[in-house]
Amino acid sequence: MFVAGDAAGQCLALTGEGIRPALVWGQEAGRQAARVVRGEASLDAALAAYRTQVLAHRWQYRTLERIQAGLLRAPRAVLPTAVRIFAHGPIARVAQAYYWDLADPDRLQVAPGVWSDVHVTAEQCGAGPAATAVEQEPLRGSTSR
Image (cartoon, rainbow, N blue to C red; front, side, top):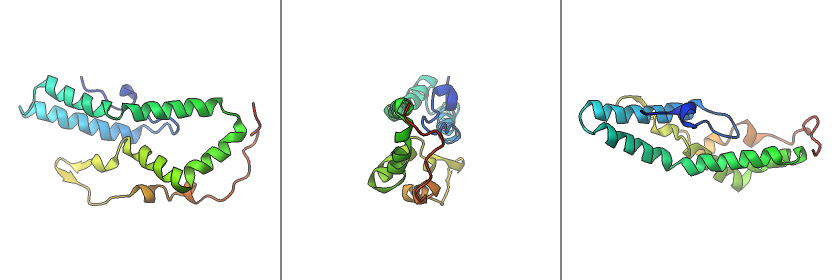
């Protein structure tokens, strides 16, 4: 059985994003299932190929879970600084590239065999509101626990 999205634990920690991973991995599961239907691979071989691809990203999902767990234990006063670190500068670029690689939307096809000619770079994705935010007021109740 092919499993994708929330059922496969592919929801992204920190943001709770699940639609992009469900689309990317669901489409990959569909590609592998299509190989079986066309007689290009056995079910076992297709499942193994899908599993190999998913497991190649498992460490990234686990890393996000560990970061989330650490942030949940951190004093609230640390959170605004953490957001700024991950929204600006060299750490932000690395973190955002890592985040997008978990379920790269460039892997999606708009139709079987048809790839989109539109590509949004990690830098463009990182240029959203968080990347251009100015100093914000502290969060209400942002005191240490």
